[in-house]
Length: 204
Image (cartoon, rainbow, N blue to C red; front, side):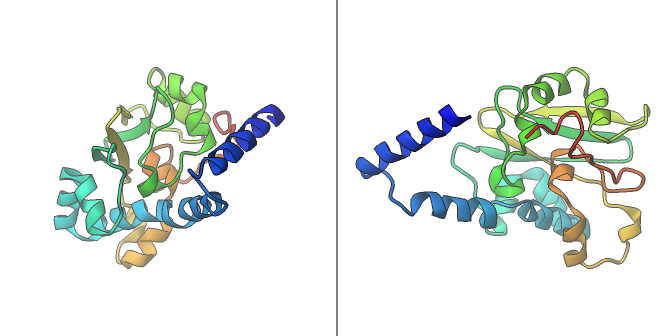
């Protein structure tokens, strides 16, 4: 790690010398990551879809355009945002077997465990077991579908709206939607309310 820090520092100094970045670049980027590219963006889209059937149809048909309608941009190489809906019969979960790609401007930067080779390689082969190790125990009757990010396609999960939220405002709904539920390693309805961030997969 110390060697890596030295390499990063050396690279930063070189880029500054070549006038490719300046002293504010890192702080500006940190601000964007922590304040603009946050899971609350995805939560806002999902909450609106829960209360507005027309917007839900829009979000499921063209996630990138729906996100844009809220003012949420995506990099040009993110050609599409595909939203997969959880139901009482189907549970969806996403990964990136090649690296750690996500729709980071919509659901936030990828967590450490999402980047872990163990998660990326095992999820596509034994999803039920991996999710169980992460604290999400699913019934055998619930079908699991794994969506692997491609070069130009990003995914987001639409959690099933919990029955206990009937009558809640859109703002209150936003507060219960987590990054983990947008990735698909957690469900929001009872009894699926546990996500153990210190379990086997959470190494980052």
